[in-house]
Amino acid sequence: MAIRDDLTTWVALKSVDGIGSVAFRNLLAVYGSPARVFEAPLADLEQAAGLHHKTARNIKDFRDWDRARGEVARAEREGVSILTCQDPGYPERLRRIYDPPPLLYIKGSLEAADIPVAVVGSRNASPYGRYVTERLCRELAQRGVTIVSGLARGIDTCAHRGALSARGRTIAVMGCGIDVIYPPENRKLHGEVASSGAVVTEYPFGTEPDRPHFPARNRIISGLSLGVLIVEAGEKSGSLITAQCALEQNREVFAVPGGIDLPGSRGTNRLLRQGAKLVEGVEDILEEILPQLERPPAPTPGETKAPAGRRVGTEKHETGREPLTEDESRLLGCISDMPQDADTLINRTGLAAAEALALLLSLELKGYILQLPGKRFKLKET
Picture 1: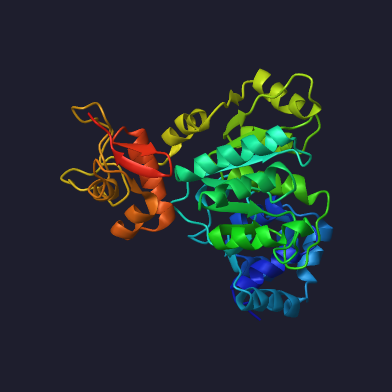
Picture 2 (picture 1 turned 120 degrees about the vertical axis):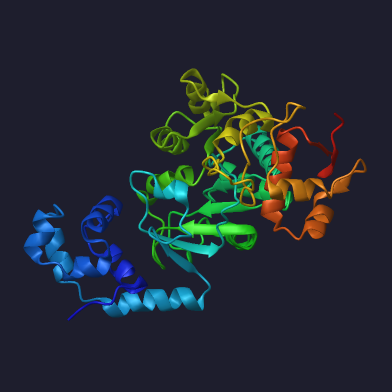
Protein backbone atom coordinates (compact mmCIF):
# COMPACT_ATOMS: atom_id res chain seq x y z
CA MET A 1 0.00 0.00 0.00
CA ALA A 2 1.43 3.38 -1.05
CA ILE A 3 2.27 5.85 1.71
CA ARG A 4 1.04 9.38 1.18
CA ASP A 5 3.93 11.82 0.98
CA ASP A 6 3.03 14.61 3.41
CA LEU A 7 4.40 16.28 6.52
CA THR A 8 3.49 13.24 8.60
CA THR A 9 5.99 11.07 6.71
CA TRP A 10 8.74 13.63 7.40
CA VAL A 11 7.97 13.64 11.12
CA ALA A 12 7.77 9.85 11.12
CA LEU A 13 11.12 9.32 9.37
CA LYS A 14 12.85 11.84 11.64
CA SER A 15 11.58 9.89 14.67
CA VAL A 16 13.06 6.57 13.51
CA ASP A 17 15.86 5.45 15.80
CA GLY A 18 19.21 5.83 14.05
CA ILE A 19 18.10 8.51 11.54
CA GLY A 20 20.05 11.68 12.18
CA SER A 21 20.39 14.74 9.97
CA VAL A 22 23.10 13.29 7.73
CA ALA A 23 21.32 9.95 7.27
CA PHE A 24 18.08 11.80 6.50
CA ARG A 25 19.88 13.92 3.90
CA ASN A 26 21.41 10.85 2.28
CA LEU A 27 18.04 9.09 2.13
CA LEU A 28 16.47 12.12 0.45
CA ALA A 29 19.32 12.17 -2.07
CA VAL A 30 18.57 8.55 -3.02
CA TYR A 31 14.78 8.39 -2.78
CA GLY A 32 13.59 12.01 -3.07
CA SER A 33 10.94 11.84 -0.34
CA PRO A 34 10.29 10.14 3.03
CA ALA A 35 7.31 8.27 1.58
CA ARG A 36 9.58 6.50 -0.93
CA VAL A 37 12.02 5.70 1.88
CA PHE A 38 9.31 3.88 3.82
CA GLU A 39 8.31 1.98 0.68
CA ALA A 40 11.87 0.90 -0.22
CA PRO A 41 12.84 -2.78 0.29
CA LEU A 42 15.08 -3.56 3.25
CA ALA A 43 17.98 -4.70 1.07
CA ASP A 44 17.74 -1.53 -1.00
CA LEU A 45 17.91 0.66 2.11
CA GLU A 46 21.12 -1.10 3.12
CA GLN A 47 22.74 -1.15 -0.31
CA ALA A 48 21.57 1.98 -2.11
CA ALA A 49 21.36 4.24 0.95
CA GLY A 50 24.19 2.62 2.90
CA LEU A 51 22.21 2.25 6.12
CA HIS A 52 23.25 -0.12 8.90
CA HIS A 53 21.01 -3.19 8.98
CA LYS A 54 19.50 -2.21 12.35
CA THR A 55 18.58 1.30 11.15
CA ALA A 56 17.09 -0.05 7.91
CA ARG A 57 15.13 -2.57 9.96
CA ASN A 58 13.84 0.26 12.20
CA ILE A 59 12.43 1.99 9.11
CA LYS A 60 10.68 -1.13 7.88
CA ASP A 61 9.28 -1.89 11.34
CA PHE A 62 7.96 1.65 11.94
CA ARG A 63 4.34 1.62 13.09
CA ASP A 64 4.00 4.78 15.19
CA TRP A 65 1.97 6.71 12.63
CA ASP A 66 -0.56 7.96 15.17
CA ARG A 67 2.17 9.74 17.08
CA ALA A 68 3.50 11.37 13.90
CA ARG A 69 0.00 12.51 12.91
CA GLY A 70 -0.52 13.82 16.45
CA GLU A 71 2.70 15.86 16.20
CA VAL A 72 1.50 17.57 13.03
CA ALA A 73 -1.97 18.17 14.47
CA ARG A 74 -0.51 19.68 17.64
CA ALA A 75 1.65 22.04 15.62
CA GLU A 76 -1.41 23.27 13.76
CA ARG A 77 -3.35 23.78 17.01
CA GLU A 78 -0.55 25.70 18.69
CA GLY A 79 0.42 27.91 15.77
CA VAL A 80 3.78 26.22 15.22
CA SER A 81 5.08 25.87 11.67
CA ILE A 82 7.02 22.73 10.75
CA LEU A 83 9.25 23.40 7.76
CA THR A 84 10.97 20.62 5.86
CA CYS A 85 14.38 21.15 4.30
CA GLN A 86 12.67 21.00 0.88
CA ASP A 87 10.19 23.75 1.78
CA PRO A 88 10.69 27.03 -0.18
CA GLY A 89 10.50 28.92 3.13
CA TYR A 90 13.37 26.95 4.68
CA PRO A 91 16.34 29.32 5.29
CA GLU A 92 18.68 28.99 2.34
CA ARG A 93 21.88 29.53 4.33
CA LEU A 94 20.93 26.76 6.71
CA ARG A 95 19.97 24.46 3.84
CA ARG A 96 23.54 24.69 2.50
CA ILE A 97 25.37 23.47 5.61
CA TYR A 98 26.72 19.92 5.81
CA ASP A 99 24.01 18.59 8.13
CA PRO A 100 20.91 20.79 7.89
CA PRO A 101 18.08 19.77 10.21
CA PRO A 102 15.43 17.93 8.14
CA LEU A 103 12.68 19.69 10.09
CA LEU A 104 12.42 23.08 11.77
CA TYR A 105 9.71 23.81 14.32
CA ILE A 106 9.04 27.56 14.27
CA LYS A 107 6.99 29.72 16.61
CA GLY A 108 6.85 33.14 14.97
CA SER A 109 8.33 33.75 11.53
CA LEU A 110 11.60 33.60 9.64
CA GLU A 111 11.83 36.40 7.09
CA ALA A 112 13.74 36.36 3.81
CA ALA A 113 14.63 40.02 4.45
CA ASP A 114 16.44 39.19 7.71
CA ILE A 115 20.09 40.19 8.01
CA PRO A 116 21.00 37.65 10.72
CA VAL A 117 24.00 37.85 13.03
CA ALA A 118 24.48 35.36 15.86
CA VAL A 119 25.55 36.59 19.29
CA VAL A 120 26.52 34.01 21.93
CA GLY A 121 28.68 33.77 25.02
CA SER A 122 29.05 32.68 28.60
CA ARG A 123 26.09 31.74 30.77
CA ASN A 124 28.00 33.24 33.72
CA ALA A 125 28.50 36.62 32.12
CA SER A 126 30.16 39.49 33.93
CA PRO A 127 28.40 42.87 34.28
CA TYR A 128 30.70 44.17 31.54
CA GLY A 129 29.78 41.30 29.21
CA ARG A 130 26.07 41.87 29.80
CA TYR A 131 26.38 45.59 29.18
CA VAL A 132 28.41 45.20 25.98
CA THR A 133 26.08 42.51 24.63
CA GLU A 134 22.90 44.51 25.18
CA ARG A 135 24.46 47.64 23.72
CA LEU A 136 25.83 45.97 20.60
CA CYS A 137 22.63 44.02 19.96
CA ARG A 138 20.48 47.10 20.47
CA GLU A 139 22.59 49.06 18.00
CA LEU A 140 22.65 46.20 15.49
CA ALA A 141 18.87 45.87 15.72
CA GLN A 142 18.52 49.62 15.18
CA ARG A 143 20.43 49.13 11.92
CA GLY A 144 18.03 46.40 10.80
CA VAL A 145 20.11 43.38 11.82
CA THR A 146 18.28 40.33 13.20
CA ILE A 147 19.94 38.91 16.33
CA VAL A 148 20.22 35.11 16.53
CA SER A 149 21.04 33.44 19.84
CA GLY A 150 20.17 30.47 22.03
CA LEU A 151 17.90 31.85 24.80
CA ALA A 152 20.36 30.56 27.41
CA ARG A 153 21.25 32.40 30.58
CA GLY A 154 23.85 35.15 30.45
CA ILE A 155 25.01 36.53 27.11
CA ASP A 156 22.23 34.87 25.07
CA THR A 157 19.53 36.43 27.22
CA CYS A 158 21.19 39.86 26.96
CA ALA A 159 21.45 39.48 23.17
CA HIS A 160 17.70 38.88 22.79
CA ARG A 161 16.86 41.68 25.22
CA GLY A 162 19.12 44.12 23.41
CA ALA A 163 17.34 43.46 20.12
CA LEU A 164 13.90 43.67 21.72
CA SER A 165 14.77 46.98 23.41
CA ALA A 166 15.27 48.44 19.91
CA ARG A 167 11.99 46.87 18.73
CA GLY A 168 14.06 44.73 16.37
CA ARG A 169 13.79 41.11 15.25
CA THR A 170 15.49 38.30 17.11
CA ILE A 171 15.61 34.51 16.68
CA ALA A 172 16.11 31.98 19.49
CA VAL A 173 17.35 28.50 18.62
CA MET A 174 16.43 25.96 21.29
CA GLY A 175 18.07 22.72 22.36
CA CYS A 176 14.71 21.25 23.40
CA GLY A 177 11.11 21.05 22.21
CA ILE A 178 9.51 24.34 21.27
CA ASP A 179 6.97 23.90 24.09
CA VAL A 180 9.68 23.35 26.73
CA ILE A 181 10.85 26.59 28.35
CA TYR A 182 14.54 26.42 29.20
CA PRO A 183 15.81 28.02 31.29
CA PRO A 184 12.45 28.36 33.08
CA GLU A 185 13.07 31.97 34.10
CA ASN A 186 13.05 32.93 30.41
CA ARG A 187 9.37 32.05 29.91
CA LYS A 188 8.40 35.69 29.31
CA LEU A 189 11.40 36.26 27.04
CA HIS A 190 10.47 33.13 25.06
CA GLY A 191 7.08 34.68 24.28
CA GLU A 192 8.53 38.08 23.43
CA VAL A 193 11.03 36.54 21.00
CA ALA A 194 8.28 34.52 19.29
CA SER A 195 6.24 37.71 18.89
CA SER A 196 9.15 39.79 17.57
CA GLY A 197 10.92 37.16 15.47
CA ALA A 198 10.98 33.42 15.96
CA VAL A 199 11.72 30.59 18.35
CA VAL A 200 13.23 27.68 16.41
CA THR A 201 14.15 24.09 17.18
CA GLU A 202 14.75 20.82 15.36
CA TYR A 203 13.38 18.77 18.25
CA PRO A 204 9.78 17.51 18.52
CA PHE A 205 7.29 18.63 21.14
CA GLY A 206 8.08 17.56 24.67
CA THR A 207 11.82 17.03 24.11
CA GLU A 208 13.60 17.94 27.33
CA PRO A 209 16.94 19.79 27.29
CA ASP A 210 19.80 17.34 27.18
CA ARG A 211 23.55 17.97 27.10
CA PRO A 212 24.14 16.65 23.51
CA HIS A 213 21.34 18.85 22.17
CA PHE A 214 23.18 22.10 22.79
CA PRO A 215 26.30 21.49 20.67
CA ALA A 216 23.93 20.23 17.95
CA ARG A 217 21.77 23.37 18.05
CA ASN A 218 24.91 25.54 17.74
CA ARG A 219 25.27 24.52 14.09
CA ILE A 220 21.78 25.95 13.49
CA ILE A 221 22.63 29.23 15.24
CA SER A 222 25.66 29.73 13.01
CA GLY A 223 23.98 28.18 9.96
CA LEU A 224 21.19 30.75 10.03
CA SER A 225 23.64 33.64 10.32
CA LEU A 226 26.04 35.68 8.24
CA GLY A 227 28.47 35.80 11.12
CA VAL A 228 28.88 34.91 14.79
CA LEU A 229 29.90 37.31 17.55
CA ILE A 230 31.35 35.75 20.71
CA VAL A 231 31.12 37.84 23.88
CA GLU A 232 32.89 36.32 26.89
CA ALA A 233 33.77 32.65 26.62
CA GLY A 234 35.94 30.55 28.87
CA GLU A 235 38.51 28.11 27.55
CA LYS A 236 35.93 25.29 27.42
CA SER A 237 32.85 27.35 26.67
CA GLY A 238 30.12 25.93 24.45
CA SER A 239 30.25 29.21 22.57
CA LEU A 240 33.57 28.09 21.11
CA ILE A 241 31.70 25.17 19.53
CA THR A 242 29.47 27.74 17.82
CA ALA A 243 32.58 29.56 16.62
CA GLN A 244 33.96 26.28 15.25
CA CYS A 245 30.66 25.59 13.48
CA ALA A 246 30.84 29.07 11.98
CA LEU A 247 34.33 28.45 10.64
CA GLU A 248 33.30 25.10 9.15
CA GLN A 249 30.31 26.80 7.50
CA ASN A 250 32.50 29.62 6.15
CA ARG A 251 30.87 32.26 8.36
CA GLU A 252 32.55 35.33 9.78
CA VAL A 253 33.70 35.05 13.41
CA PHE A 254 33.84 38.14 15.61
CA ALA A 255 34.95 38.49 19.22
CA VAL A 256 34.84 41.18 21.90
CA PRO A 257 38.22 41.46 23.66
CA GLY A 258 38.30 41.00 27.42
CA GLY A 259 40.64 41.51 30.33
CA ILE A 260 43.69 39.27 30.30
CA ASP A 261 43.14 38.25 33.93
CA LEU A 262 39.47 37.27 33.53
CA PRO A 263 38.68 33.54 33.01
CA GLY A 264 35.62 34.49 30.96
CA SER A 265 37.83 36.25 28.41
CA ARG A 266 40.26 33.45 27.69
CA GLY A 267 38.15 31.85 24.98
CA THR A 268 37.40 35.10 23.16
CA ASN A 269 40.99 36.31 23.40
CA ARG A 270 42.16 32.98 21.98
CA LEU A 271 39.75 33.40 19.07
CA LEU A 272 41.26 36.83 18.41
CA ARG A 273 44.76 35.34 18.35
CA GLN A 274 43.49 32.77 15.85
CA GLY A 275 42.14 35.42 13.48
CA ALA A 276 38.65 36.35 14.65
CA LYS A 277 37.78 39.97 13.94
CA LEU A 278 38.05 42.24 16.97
CA VAL A 279 34.83 44.10 17.68
CA GLU A 280 34.79 47.50 19.36
CA GLY A 281 31.53 48.70 17.79
CA VAL A 282 28.79 47.66 15.39
CA GLU A 283 30.62 49.07 12.37
CA ASP A 284 33.25 46.34 12.79
CA ILE A 285 30.48 43.79 12.18
CA LEU A 286 28.51 45.65 9.52
CA GLU A 287 31.47 46.22 7.24
CA GLU A 288 32.06 42.47 7.07
CA ILE A 289 28.49 41.20 6.66
CA LEU A 290 27.12 43.75 4.18
CA PRO A 291 29.18 42.42 1.22
CA GLN A 292 27.75 38.94 1.89
CA LEU A 293 24.19 39.99 1.15
CA GLU A 294 23.10 38.18 -1.98
CA ARG A 295 23.45 39.95 -5.32
CA PRO A 296 21.41 38.86 -8.32
CA PRO A 297 22.88 37.59 -11.60
CA ALA A 298 23.52 40.18 -14.26
CA PRO A 299 20.33 41.20 -16.13
CA THR A 300 19.67 39.54 -19.45
CA PRO A 301 20.14 41.61 -22.64
CA GLY A 302 17.40 44.19 -23.03
CA GLU A 303 16.45 44.05 -19.36
CA THR A 304 16.46 47.54 -17.86
CA LYS A 305 14.59 46.96 -14.64
CA ALA A 306 15.76 44.88 -11.70
CA PRO A 307 13.33 43.04 -9.43
CA ALA A 308 12.29 44.93 -6.30
CA GLY A 309 14.87 44.67 -3.53
CA ARG A 310 17.75 43.85 -5.89
CA ARG A 311 20.68 45.87 -7.11
CA VAL A 312 20.50 46.95 -10.75
CA GLY A 313 24.23 46.49 -11.19
CA THR A 314 27.57 46.83 -9.48
CA GLU A 315 28.61 50.08 -11.12
CA LYS A 316 28.58 53.21 -8.97
CA HIS A 317 26.97 56.57 -9.58
CA GLU A 318 29.07 59.59 -10.42
CA THR A 319 28.95 60.45 -6.72
CA GLY A 320 30.90 57.25 -6.02
CA ARG A 321 27.96 55.65 -4.25
CA GLU A 322 26.41 52.34 -5.22
CA PRO A 323 23.16 52.44 -7.22
CA LEU A 324 19.84 51.94 -5.47
CA THR A 325 17.29 49.18 -5.74
CA GLU A 326 13.68 50.09 -6.42
CA ASP A 327 12.72 49.61 -2.78
CA GLU A 328 15.68 51.69 -1.62
CA SER A 329 14.72 54.49 -4.04
CA ARG A 330 11.13 54.42 -2.80
CA LEU A 331 12.24 54.65 0.82
CA LEU A 332 14.82 57.33 0.07
CA GLY A 333 12.05 59.43 -1.50
CA CYS A 334 10.38 59.59 1.92
CA ILE A 335 13.50 60.88 3.67
CA SER A 336 14.29 64.60 3.81
CA ASP A 337 16.73 66.97 5.47
CA MET A 338 14.44 66.96 8.50
CA PRO A 339 15.10 63.96 10.79
CA GLN A 340 12.32 61.37 10.95
CA ASP A 341 12.08 58.34 13.19
CA ALA A 342 11.99 54.81 11.79
CA ASP A 343 8.35 54.22 12.74
CA THR A 344 7.23 57.25 10.73
CA LEU A 345 9.14 56.03 7.69
CA ILE A 346 7.74 52.50 8.05
CA ASN A 347 4.19 53.87 8.20
CA ARG A 348 4.73 56.15 5.20
CA THR A 349 6.17 53.41 2.99
CA GLY A 350 3.92 50.56 4.07
CA LEU A 351 6.95 48.26 4.22
CA ALA A 352 7.31 45.55 6.84
CA ALA A 353 9.39 46.75 9.78
CA ALA A 354 12.22 44.24 9.21
CA GLU A 355 12.39 45.09 5.50
CA ALA A 356 12.36 48.85 6.14
CA LEU A 357 15.12 48.60 8.76
CA ALA A 358 17.22 46.49 6.41
CA LEU A 359 16.78 49.07 3.65
CA LEU A 360 17.65 51.92 6.02
CA LEU A 361 20.84 50.07 6.95
CA SER A 362 21.71 49.65 3.30
CA LEU A 363 21.02 53.33 2.51
CA GLU A 364 23.18 54.39 5.44
CA LEU A 365 26.09 52.17 4.45
CA LYS A 366 25.84 53.34 0.84
CA GLY A 367 26.19 56.90 2.07
CA TYR A 368 22.74 58.26 1.21
CA ILE A 369 21.40 58.89 4.70
CA LEU A 370 22.58 59.53 8.25
CA GLN A 371 21.25 57.87 11.39
CA LEU A 372 20.84 60.20 14.36
CA PRO A 373 20.26 59.36 18.04
CA GLY A 374 16.79 57.98 18.73
CA LYS A 375 16.77 55.91 15.52
CA ARG A 376 16.02 59.00 13.42
CA PHE A 377 17.17 59.40 9.83
CA LYS A 378 17.91 62.27 7.46
CA LEU A 379 19.51 62.75 4.06
CA LYS A 380 23.29 62.89 4.03
CA GLU A 381 24.80 65.99 2.49
CA THR A 382 26.80 65.29 -0.67
